[in-house]
Length: 159
Image 1: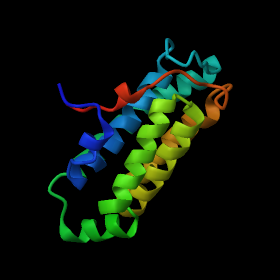
Image 2: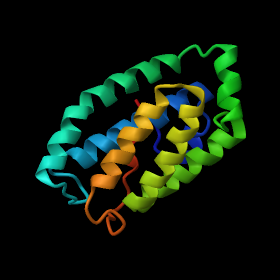
Image 3: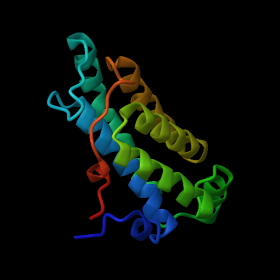
C-alpha cells in the first residue's frame, strides 16, 4: 500500500502529481454527490437530478484530461509551467491541498480544488469543464461552509 505521508507524495514526478489533482477532484465530487456522503450534505432533489445528468460528461472530460497528462509534450509543459503547475509551485499547491484534506473543511477543500482546476484550465481546455462542473456542485450544496469532518486524505488515490 502506498504511503499516505505528504512528503512521500511530493517525491512523485510532476505528471503523477497533476493526475492526482484530477483524480482527487473526481473522488471528492463523487463522494459529495453520493446521498450518503461523509459530510451529510444535501441537494434539492431537482438540483441533484440535474447534477447527476452532468456527471458522465464530467467523468468523460476527466478521463481525457488524465490522458493529456501522460507523456506531456514540451508545448503543454510550458503552459503548465506558466500556470504554476510544475516544480516547486506544484508541490506547494499539493501540500496546501493535503493540509485542507486533513482538516476536513469542505469549503476550503473546494476552494483549493477550484484554484488548481482553474490553473489546469489555463493549460488544457477541458480543464474548464472540470472546474465549471465542480463550481455547479459547490453552488448547489446546502450549508457548505459549515461542513467539516475529520481527515479526508483517503480521497487521494495513491494506487
